[in-house]
View (cartoon, rainbow, N blue to C red):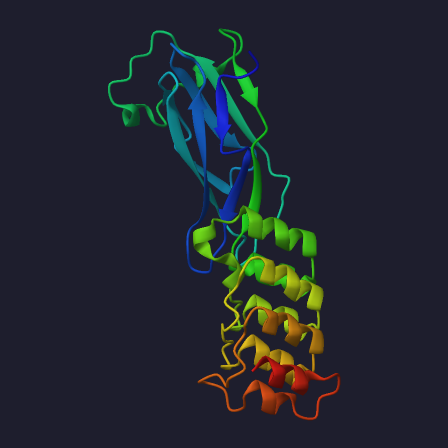
Length: 261
C-alpha cells in the first residue's frame, strides 16, 4: 500500500480569487482503510501564504473529511503571486492509529500530537501531490488581457459551473467578451463562446458585446456573436445600436448585422 488517504476529486485544488472575498478552495481526504482510523496532518511549505482548516485530525475507516485551504493575497494586490498555476507545495502526513476512538470527530481537529508523525515510531506516509491552481474573475480578466488561450481554457474548465466564471467582470466593469473584442481577437472570443457566456452582458459603459464589436469594425467577431443569437437591437443603456455603430465600417459589418436582425 502506497497511501492511507486518497485525494478527492483530485490532487488539484482550485482556489477562487474574488475582490473583497475570502480566497479559498477545498479538497476532500478519504481514509482508504477498511477497519482502522487514520491520523493526518496537512501543512503548506510556505506557511505565510496559506491557512489549512483543519490542519490535522483523525478520519474514521472509509470516511471522508473536507479540508479548506485559504490563500492570503500579497499585500496591495488583487492577484496571486503566480497564476493560474503555482509551484507551492503541501505535505500530507498520514499514519494508522489502531487504538484511537472517535466519539466526536471535530474534537480531534488540530489536536493530533506532532510526535504521531515521527517515522522513528511508526510507518508514516508522506504525500506531496497536492497542487494549487487559481481561478476567479481577476485571474481570468488578466489571462484574457494577456491572450493566454490554454490557461484561459484550463481556468474555465476547473471552475465550478455555478460560478459562471465566463461572465466575469474586471475591475473596470469590462466583461471577458469585451476584453477579447477590444483586442480584436476572434479566436479568443470563440474560446469564450464555447463556455456559453451571456452574449448580452453589458460593460460598465452600457454597451453589449455586439455593439462593441460593431463599433470596432470586427466583422468576424460580429458573425460569431450573431451565430450565438446576440441581439441586434440597441441596448437599453446604449446611445446607438449595433447597426448605427457599424455604419461606415468596412468588411460588411453593417450588412451582417442587418441580415442577423
